[in-house]
Image 1 (spheres, rainbow, N blue to C red):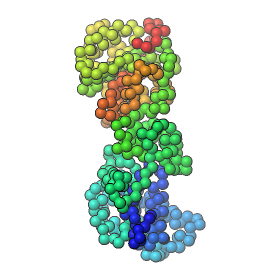
Image 2 (cartoon, rainbow, N blue to C red):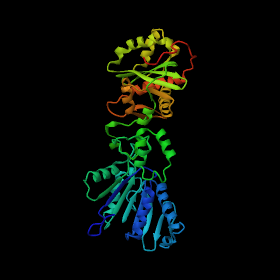
Image 3 (cartoon, rainbow, N blue to C red):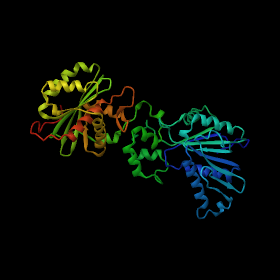
Image 4 (tube, rainbow, N blue to C red):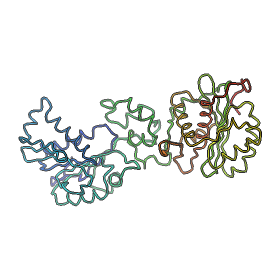
Length: 441
């Protein structure tokens, strides 16, 4: 709110990025009232992407005006000055000032000429609307435009909001203010599962944020969705470290140094889509849950090694309940090779897409609730690296695992997911074969 020597605003544009439910709407109303009562602004427009959201801001202003103890404020409103008609919401004051509430959808720049323009949901502000709005504001003697929003998602039209941010933080603009609340994904100790990380990103964390709801977001959103929507991290800030569905805290908590030694064994084999990568994992179903370990991960000409892999797996068939294979690039071929080596067809499952998606979800839930463990060992570094860069990717009505960096490999996570799914869903009767043998393979 600083002014230049000629009494015009130093900041012609004010950008604010903060996660949801942290008080943006209250800030809009506060700035509007300040314009009316303190700054002598005659026309103020509060705009949102949809009229429903604009009307929410209108309701907040009316609530303040009509609150107990605020009669002094209500006395400044003109008689019948609260206009409640849908799409024509406005409050008119005795001093001639008006606060209007408008939707941007299909409105172009019509009606946005004002002393102060407050744009909510700025992450959805289209370039065409922004150009039109600026044209209408250019004739005002001392205008100020506020843009308030959250980091744009891939579904948002966030080009304008991103350009305002970039111009401000790089110093290209000399007439912009940028305020941003968000966690730093590069900071030591950054962990989306920790309350500290969430507190850093949400200024209203200890006043109005429901912590249980946030935990539900964490459990149901992808890591990237949670990072953007709740932790206020822009996609450009995620960098090359990628996003992960299983947090560092969750993965560390599910690690064990001494694996169980008795139970029912399974194997999971995952092929990458193009067939250049393969991962093999083992699962062990025991009394307290399921334990998984990565056996091997191959890159290159995987096809040439399938016969040797089939030999290795077939040698262990007497102690294994189920083999689950996934990936069109090699699953059917490996299943055929196993049957040729007298592995019973009833023990071989080529996972369908729904079964594969179920395995992904089961593994994520199992790690989070503690029913699935993995081995804490330097020999599992490839699996650790895969977990660190693997996130959920929505496909149709479900989701699958996908690496979030160019050189990332999701197949180790897929393999342990398949092995865990086989262990949890197998209906084969327990046998004495293999009992007492550790999973270490």
